[in-house]
Length: 64
Image (cartoon, rainbow, N blue to C red; front, side, top):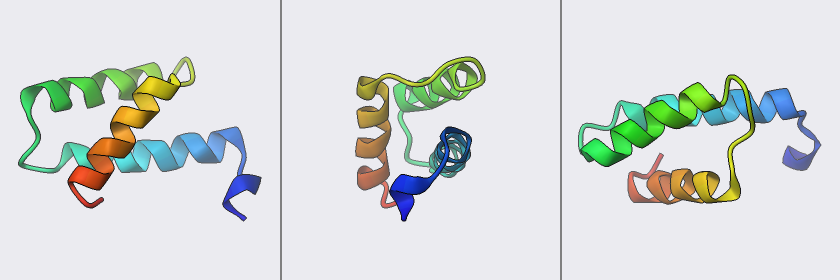
């Protein structure tokens, strides 16, 4: 079912995840800056596989 979502729906889910991660108090400065950067980039382009991998690693690290 999740593979049937639209590109816009994926973007919304990704933005929600980024917002959750941004609120984690244990984030490093680099992680905060990275999340702010990708959030801005999402408004005009898709993220790269590398960027998505970093976000997924952060998700696992902080259990979000």
